[in-house]
Length: 162
Image (cartoon, rainbow, N blue to C red; front, top):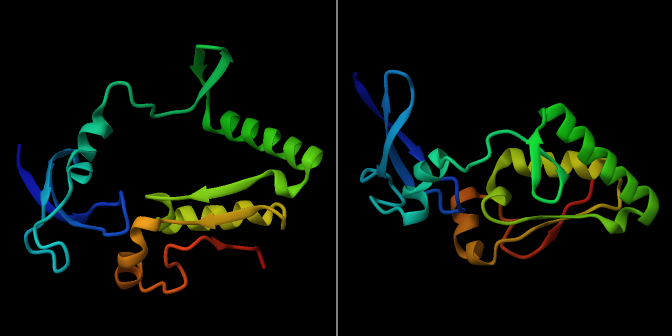
């Protein structure tokens, strides 16, 4: 089976260290290693990033939603059912306690995931009072230079829907 090396990057924190993934013909990743040619990380990657493949392959990892019928008892659930259940519960909280009863905190790595931030913004549009904070104290020094988004500097930023 032929293998291909593909340049990519770690998504676990704001540094975005360069990685090289070895991919087989079936497009499955067989290895991750630091990318020595990456202009910023220059062959460095922490153990969290390099072990991400092991986390992904862990037999205890959940790959689909589950519903808790009773304490300690879980059964498979569809994404549609799980999202519907969460939406119903969130709506009940909003209706009973108001928008200040719900807040979203996005720290590493989701605060630096473009789709995570978009999803949080969409969620906040459901009710203008929902608070969203993007925070990463450890990333204050590296996030701006890497992302160019000067308004997210590691200080809690409240994102309000327009």
